[in-house]
Length: 175
Image (cartoon, rainbow, N blue to C red; front, side, top):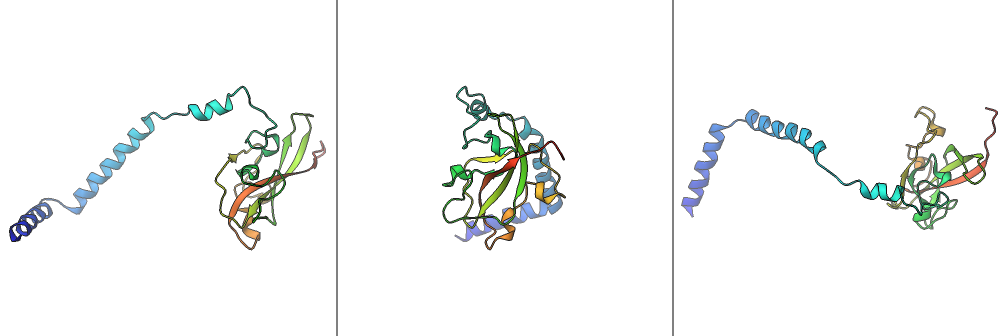
């Protein structure tokens, strides 16, 4: 077996003498730069996402779809898909002590409603029915109107599970 050790030692020393760290880094960098130009060109299938949106049996009042009217400013997993309802958290989780709001139009009566969104906390993320609706979203410096924050920060457990939406009342034209 000494011959095998000698063989690999000679090969390793030969590679070490004929290459440098800078050369290896340059080859790695070329590889990454090359793939950065190739990856965006590769084809991928978006038909499944478009098929759901273009479906003829689409119901705008289905509370397990992101297009449901109450979810116009919701960013998170729907509690209706995670064992809860539109207004109640699933068992084992609790509503966040703070929330954000949105103003959504109900297609049934054409009125705009103020909707409060509460994150349900204390259980690991549901992982189903993720929505990121940003209609009327305000910038991050207006915390009460921004949906990209972990609203579980005021709870005992900061672990996010899902989000509920509660209608507070109709929006008035006076602002």
